[in-house]
View: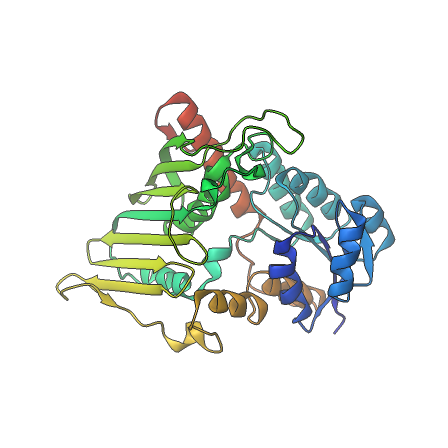
Length: 371
């Protein structure tokens, strides 16, 4: 079978930590080129990963190479133009979240992918982790019964630094932590419970961030904490709290905490991105909350000694996210009709709709319906 020929735009640590290890381990993937703002950096990364070509201009790269797919791991402002360039040439596209800085652009990207039959993906990473896939299956199988409410908290501490970070510069990250961290959990909430009827959001900037950008200029500060209350069309209600100013004291300084309640049961999930990654639960009448061991189907061949080893194995060795993207394209090339890949651009656009509505809710100080 012909290999899937792919290029990556973006040469940050994320490309080296996530995409290059995953793709170089995939027997059907061939990374032809890397593209970045700095040619020397792009050449350095390309050489380290045995990639033959490096570019600084996306259009030149797309014109010179015969590609099947593109991965876009750039700053947010590159997502729309690079995706549309690639799709106009019939390339399948994996684009980092948020899909775009503007809802209308995100919806245009989703519409273009649908119209052209493009295989698309938005990597909301956490939904691929074994524990959350187990939680999803338990909920789908009726563990909670009729859902009542949930709490999902994404605690991180990188916003406590006073150094400049583009994530807190509203020119480049207008959604702040609502869009950066909160979008992950907004996707998980809709993945678990479906469409949102309405929401209320409060944003804040609680920590002191850099006064100037690297050019010595003042810049508008983006939020570092977001609280969103949601009501779903199926009657479920809950809240998502995403903050970058919560000190956790672990190696990764990050923690995910989730609680789900229904008329038949309760589920808990906690992940400290160090050594704790656990699912707990109980059904009505069964007594106290207990640990629910993950069945082998979720963890076969995956290390569970440390959360980051689990993370690496899921994305570098198993057929999830970028690797699933390649497999889907290979099957498509072979004339097969594989199961739809999720989350795709339509999912990314819907999350962008929730982020956009949440921003308006904060600005207007009121509950808003999600149209």
